[in-house]
Image (cartoon, rainbow, N blue to C red):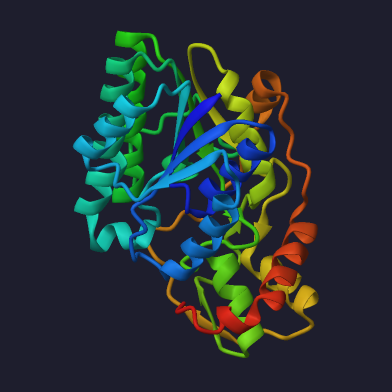
Length: 322
């Protein structure tokens, strides 16, 4: 297949791109390489893709419809995987407009061009943040129409647009609601990356809330394999991709990192953020039924692999701002 992969220098995008290339697909990757966090991380991930002859990269923003139109005119895509997004609940409160233009307007640009060029497969990253207030474990049929952050609101709007374009143009669509993705070369605005680096550097760990809040941590490789499997979806489906086991408390994550690094955490307790969800837990039965997908990496092993990567890359990671 020839696949347009947006957000290819992102945490999830780069791993998805690597798996696509390993299985023999041709990938056209786009990313705007914005400075939401240190671009050196994005360049590190991108370098792992550019060694493949079947990969080509364009520095394009999904907000730029004209630039996207040129790509669609130059290539005959079999599918679009849209992983380009402004992510992060707290940052979306500070700058909601950029979340709207990237997450919602960017998705609309892709859908319009897919319909125009008769591209029939669409996979889009969404978020477990939509489930705020729902009963756990979160199931795809839950009412998600009351988001508590601009980030979640823009993702909900993107989901609605994708469903509309499926209805109007028959685009086979998989909406993937990811649950707290972590792993090597992660995002420095997320707690797994930050906590490992703070502990490794001997700096205070800023913990918002009392640490009992839980997350359904999902290892990056499991997320990437589930994303590839969703390319075969027919019709329109919303699918949870999460750990699917016992969610970990933040204090348990810290303990796992301490064990993996051999270093103790110095915790600086901060007030809880009202935009943060207290707990998350994924019902992944649908992913198992439709995709044959079951996560294989438990958090203890996943955090060990992630900590090892941080220790091996310590020299340049020391320069990354947290």
